[in-house]
Amino acid sequence: MPSGQAPPPAPYREHSPPPALQPHFQCLWSSTVAPDYAGGFLVVPDGCVDIVCKGGRLLAVGPDRVAARPALVPGSEVWGARFGPGAASAWLGLPMDEIVGQAVELGDLLGPCVREWVHRINDAQPGAGQAVFIHGLVQMGRDAPELDRQAMELFNVAAAAGRDESGVLAAMRAQLDMSERSLRRLCHAQFGYGPKTLERVLRFQRLLALARSDRQAGLAALAAEAGYADQAHLSREVRALCGITPRAALQQLLD
Image (cartoon, one colour):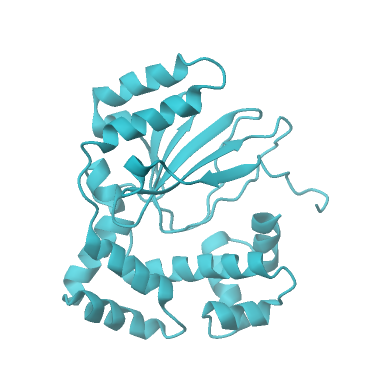
């Protein structure tokens, strides 16, 4: 790792949610922050919303337009549940464009039951807190509304979009058979931003996946395969989303 770059905060692990949560969450995850963590960890936009448990709090972490560097306590544990496309708005009871770039107290959205859940997590025996967190999700999931199927379709179209940004809206409208105004309203409510921004975010995630699968690939090859017009286009987009160069972003996110 280059001198001066902060170490990664922790081993980050994802695992499948229990069957009761699979209709609503794409994964559960955990991270143990390194005792010598000095800050600088980069979290990039992914078009998703998470419920996060950290520092004795439960938070609804909204979608990001640009990268964030969250405050993390050295030696602490962080647990999360990542909503599947189309699930967060119904579960949390508000449109996602109201919490873009924010971490909101879950109790402010869902009421006293969350405060009781937080108490159970904080009172758990050492090593048992994550199980209590997951059990609380399962309990709340029993009464959760069904996810929005149109939002799932919209997400899939955006994720599969190629280089032609001008064609994204047309492809979405054709797939969902709705007006441009209705499409934009749906996208803002379910993902926090418009269709083109969603497509940009998901193309960046496609870039990261390709870079992870081939660590030797050059930026020009990655740009072509991920759906950027060229390497210069990739560089502009990565700087806009992350605030740093593509090489620096990949170095931090893939190490």
